[in-house]
Length: 454
Image 1 (tube, rainbow, N blue to C red):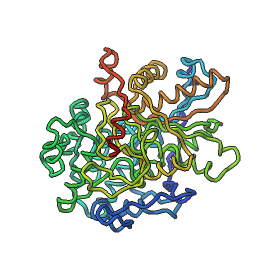
Image 2: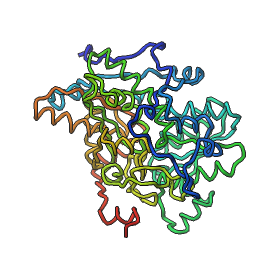
Image 3: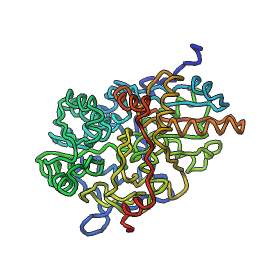
Image 4: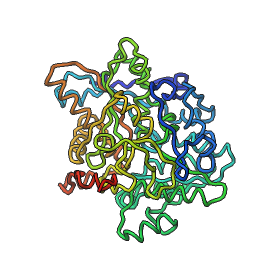
């Protein structure tokens, strides 16, 4: 059995030196962001006042396939990369499936999730630019914790707006952010105009990622020498995350297999893009033996932007401060249910993923909350790792596919991204084990209302 637990790791020399920019290979490029005032296409320089300039250039780059990882960033990556690729023999046995299941274990990073892969370069670029303060939003707290840590590495002050319901559900993530010196505020708050307006309209508002983004962007705009950093959705964030899939490619070669399916949970698109885009380039190019792979995004049934949303230009935040982005959306005023997968409670999908979805290069499934926790518990008992509630969506989708293989007798190879551990999410597991969690379904009426069709 010990041999079956073998993990595939890379040497330091094999850790990626460049990020992969899928925009260069896409048959249909993502539509440009629009200025919210003029509705005219924006250029990279139009984003400079809010984001690190290098991130803005990466955001709009649709020509360079490979973008150099700065040496200082790569050195920080070496603290925890490469992350293991693991053959999930225990899960295969528990399911009685002929499928070969692998997972990329991003939970081993210092912050316990994949989010650090983008937090480090964003903090680095801000420091290089002479910025002294960074601000952001966070749902479950994994991104906020990662940015707080990355800011401390580069001597930056960090302010984080955490969605209020997650601030209350996950106090230890808040503590992690504060341990690394970040100021953490539950959102919506009375510290910004956006927060005040939201609380005036709805004093009991439990917040959303859209709300927290509004507050963080407002703070960045009104604070000298401060930039905003984002943990998902935008193109440059998915770019940084491609270290996951680039490593996984080499590790799958070590295992002597190639994935028939690549699966990841989906909130805004960062960890899905990170694991999927490097493999997807072979599908786009039609390479022999590598063009058959299915790419599956697993989202909450209560926040189903890919499976039930509408493709159109929409704001990335509730107050309408951000550029208009071409996305599959539930409407930027959408109020998500208080599920425990706080990192997936976002109304829209990133513009790259949205275009890939339109072009049929990927697919999506929506999964009820109880099924995700059932999958997480099964995985924990089979593999000895308690997954984050967000990652439980990827596991649930993997289990669905593995069971189909059992029914058909097909020996498919499935790769999924374990994007974070659940050791600070045990309150949510307590509620599940006590029978206190429920499924949330988005009604057609509520969907029409959030899309402004009523």
